[in-house]
Image (cartoon, rainbow, N blue to C red; front, top):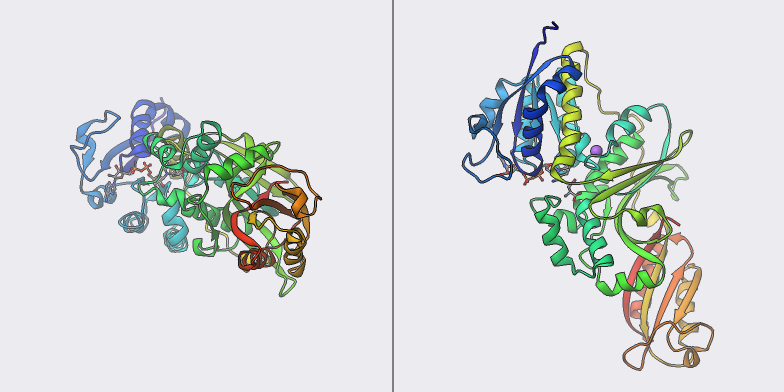
Length: 447
Ligand SMILES: NC(=O)C1=CN([C@@H]2O[C@H](COP(=O)(O)OP(=O)(O)OC[C@H]3O[C@@H](n4cnc5c(N)ncnc54)[C@H](O)[C@@H]3O)[C@@H](O)[C@H]2O)C=CC1
Ligand SMILES: N[C@@H](CC=O)C(=O)O
Ligand code: NA
C-alpha cells in the first residue's frame, strides 16, 4: 500500500465558494489524495462567526475565528474571504511561513499581485489563482503555461458572470437591472459589494490579471479603462435587439501600436458594447463567461463555461489545491510572475473602435447635413444613418422609429476611428444647437 504524506490545508472563509470547497474536500478528499499522491487533511476553516447559518452543513469542530493560528500549521492556505484586508495580511503570513497559497481573490491580485508574487518568489512558495478569472473556466493556466511558447495579441471576453446574467435577463425576460441583480446575488454570483460587478471593477481587475499574464507586463487594475453597466437602460437593450445586436460587458486586452512612438503598447479596457447577435459572444447566456484568445501561432482559441457560482468556482480552487499537493510531493521552486516584456500600457484615447450614437434632433431641414459635418470635422467616417422623419431631414434614409415630440431620432453608426476622435465628436454633438439630447452612445465590438 502506498504511504502518503499528509498535506495540511487551512481554509479561510466559508461563504458561497469556501463552503463548497470544504464540502467537496470532505466528500472527495481520498480521490483528490490519490490524484495528488499525498493525503490531504482539511485542518480548519476560519470564519467570522462560528454560529452563522450556512447553506452547507459542515463539521462544527473545523471552525475557528483565529485565522492566524490556523495559518501557522498549514502547508497550503486557501483564501476565500475576498477583499483586500485581512486577506492580504493572511496570504503574506502564509507565504512567509512557507505555505503555498490558493486564492480566488481578483481584487487582491489586481491591487497587490506584485507584492504577493515577490513574497512567494523570495521563499520559493507558489501562488495559485485559477478561480480568480472566469470562475470554473481554465484560463490562467492556459495563458501562463500552455501558451508560454506563443505570442498572445488579443483577448476579448465576457469575464463577469453577474453582469452577463443581468444583461441577459434584461434582454430575454424584460427584467430591470435591480431585480436581475437581486436574483444574481441570491444565486451566489455577485460580489459582497455588487458595485464591484455593476461598475465593471471586477471585470477590470480580471482584465488586469489577464493582460499581465498574456503580455508579460505588469498591468495595474487602475490602468484598465472601465465603464460599468449602471447606465444601461431597457430602451438601449430593446433598440439593440431590433438592430440585431445584444449588449454585453466586454473586457478587451490587446497589443496596439502607440501612435506617439510607433512602438508596441498594451490596451486593457472594460465597457458595455453592442455585439452582433451572430457573434458567438451573443450566445453566452446567464452567468457564463467566454474568453477569446488570439495568439500568433495558435490562432483563435475560445474558453467558455461557468464564470461564477459556488460549486463551479470551487472546481477551479480544488484543481489548484491538487497542483499545490503535487508540488508538495515533488518539490521545486514556484513559478515566478513573468513581467519581463514591460510594455507600456496605453490610454483609451489611442484605441481604434466604432460607436453607435443615438441623437434626438430638431425636426428641421438641413439637420442631417449639420450632424454629418460634426463627424467629418473630427475625422470620423459615418457608416450608417437611420432616422425617423426622412422628409423634413432631407429624405435620404429609411424611417425606423417615431420620436415622441416634434423632433426626430437619428441612429448613427461609425467606421473604426480613434477613441479620442469619437469622444470629441460626441462632445461636439452634445453642444450642437440642433441636437436636443444624446440619447445613447455605445461602442460596437466583435464584428
Ligand atoms: N461567488 C463566485 O461566483 C466567485 C467568487 N470569487 C471570489 O471568491 C472569493 C469568495 O467569494 P464568495 O464565496 O462569493 O464570497 P462570500 O461573501 O459568499 O464569502 C466570503 C466569506 O468570508 C467570510 N469572511 C469575511 N471576512 C472574514 C475574516 N476576516 N475571517 C474569516 N472569514 C471572513 C464572510 O463572512 C463570508 O462568509 C472572493 O474573492 C470572490 O471575488 C471568484 C470567482 C467566482
Ligand atoms: N462576482 C463575480 C464572481 C466571479 O468572479 C462575477 O459575477 O463574475
Ligand atoms: Na478560471
